[in-house]
Length: 122
Image 1 (cartoon, helix red, strand yellow):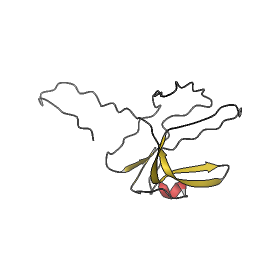
Image 2 (cartoon, rainbow, N blue to C red):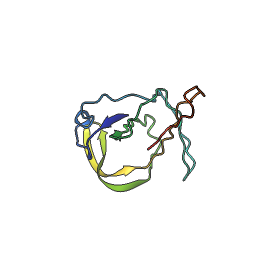
Image 3 (cartoon, rainbow, N blue to C red):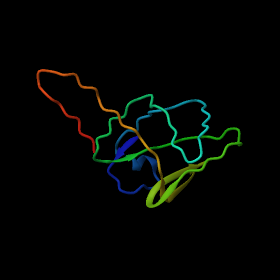
């Protein structure tokens, strides 16, 4: 995951990071995914990512179908330069983006002498 101020992606991964450093939040040497049709699925990140709530967010997903038996399909919506694929060194900028759901969890607060506290989400 990586913050960016860009409104559209380019064919250059590094330029898309906009001077920011991507953070690897989840990695496995191998993982099988048995998703139920039309249902959300997911897993918890290994590393936290502190999203600033202002800039655009790049979510970079890498997968390799080593056994050539799997297939992948996703739900996508029309957009402008919202997806970038690298298939064996061939870069394709696409005008749609994939839908995903990210669940945010707040930091727990302990009662203190400061009185009531609030957590804000955008």
